[in-house]
Image (tube, rainbow, N blue to C red):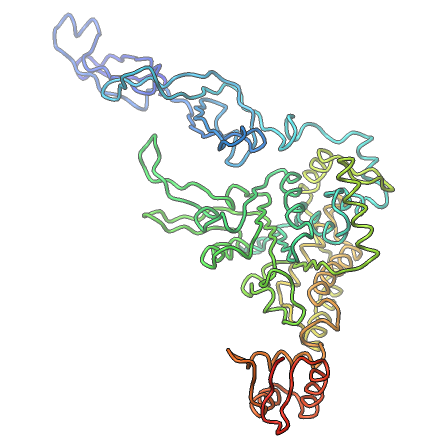
Length: 541
């Protein structure tokens, strides 16, 4: 309220009171000449319809993580915004605020003795800033030279290779991350919402640059939030109920997923999260909303974000002797990720040599080794991705039969090979999302056959990374190794097991007596175990 309007109950005169502070003392007695002459003592009543109001907003602004002093936590300040500057900044935005630094003056019973007082910033100008540079976001269109750099034939490969160029390899993973930044097209047929955001999980051995990729995507995305699994709770990811300091009412404060709305939420150490906290992500990954029923507040918050997660296998490193489900142990979330990449650290002399040379060069020169092309600037990529997200490509009727046939073929191959990965209707939706993201990347309005083929190729590459070498998967490894693992499970505290019990267990799992005997002889020659002369006990050496 800027000007309070009062009406006298005796003379009907209007009285105006300018208000300069957050609190004010309302007028009681009418100051008009008529009431003073008649000494009628008219009382004033506040008329809200005749008073003048302006828009008001109170914000909490927190220091950027790059500017935090050593050994301190990020500082925060209260910002009071009035007039047309309200609602310019949304939670999670990076902004530059120009204003006047003032103390909060307490009056009446709230007056505080002493020389210290709380402070606030009276905002006069608010500008949205780019995430890593000190310039305004969304400034201008692309120049002719920038369009020429992007309009080359291999622009798709160039854009993907420009993502974290200091990290060696992972070409297909970088292409998938580029499509995650661009995103698909949201669909709402007759009220049912089909998400367009792409969710990706990077799972692999320690030291394969998963966290570095997440950190780069967090810096590259125009709007993003970065958190870790161990340091995140279900409330911290979704929303918390707090009491507002101004009105005293219970309000909702959004968590990381809400702050990343229309952006990317990067979650590192995804496997370290508690199961109860991880279930809070299920609704976000499919319905793109967060339903809250706390302290009498029933509402639904938007969380239209892509989730990029990084996790380690269940045993720290991927164990090829165990099945895919035993290694990953995220069954409920497995099908909600459009792409699940398994990055293994396999010894390879040539590849290890190139990787070591690449890391050494980066460490010495603080930049990526010279390549066949110059990586695109992060600011240029951010602006181009923002332009791509404005496109709304559609799938033409002519491609419907082709996509349907490709999906049916994927289902048939998965059934024939007893595929351990999920191939369901969500797989078809993932192909459509990836296809529309590729069309967005080319700045066209129609999905083409090449886009569908590339989406299917990325889908198959992610599945192949899960299956690994055919000789290494649990379904196709040697019978002798599986029999050894079965016998090893039977050994409790001792070092021996009954021969008949081991044979019966292996036969119940589908192995023949001949395979059991061959495995027994093989590991006995390797001096792993010994079988007594009566063939009644197997003793581990």
